[in-house]
Amino acid sequence: MNNHKGLLISLGSFLLILSGCATDESIDYETPVELAPMAKVSEPSESHGTNQGKPQMEQRISKEGALETWKVSGGAVDGCQWTGEGWFSPAVSWKNCRNGSTGSQTVTKSGEIWPLVVGKTVSYDVKGSDQKYNWTDTRECVVNAAVHVTVETQKIPAYEVVCKDEWNTRTWYVSPDLKRTIKFKKRHKKRGLESHWIADLK
Image (cartoon, rainbow, N blue to C red; front, top):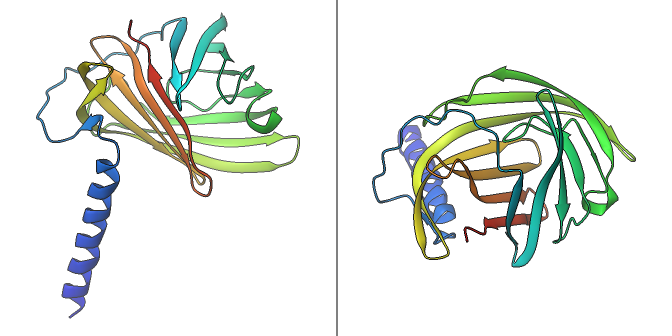
């Protein structure tokens, strides 16, 4: 009986995962795609796109060693500025971000996700503070799948990289051919979808 119960739980979890995937019709998990390993590259110094339907640009305004500083123009976090190692790593500092948040955190990395290959992982232990709170957390990232992503009228092969911490799930869709993120989603455990960024490929 316990085995049947376990089977039902596993089946329920599997169906839940499938239903979650089906909510975004731009992501094709069914069509087979083979991607070569993607080495780490610098992201474009400017990325134009829309975030939940509103125009938004992210611009790298400085770079010092491994740390890059970025600023957002447009959208719900217009004026937000953060510094970090880029890609999937948590920021080490930020200001004027969501709800006016300004803060900093130490980041300790374990593992190596580059070059991107399905199944590779990395984790980041963080200890931070802002105007209101102090916290510790861990962001766990995995190259979850190779998929096709529809952006505008193009169907683009990409790696799906999923990063989870205590409160958020962040998902990047990274194109090895374009060497950039073409889609990004952030979902908060309580507040739901907070960011749905789609690149402007024109």
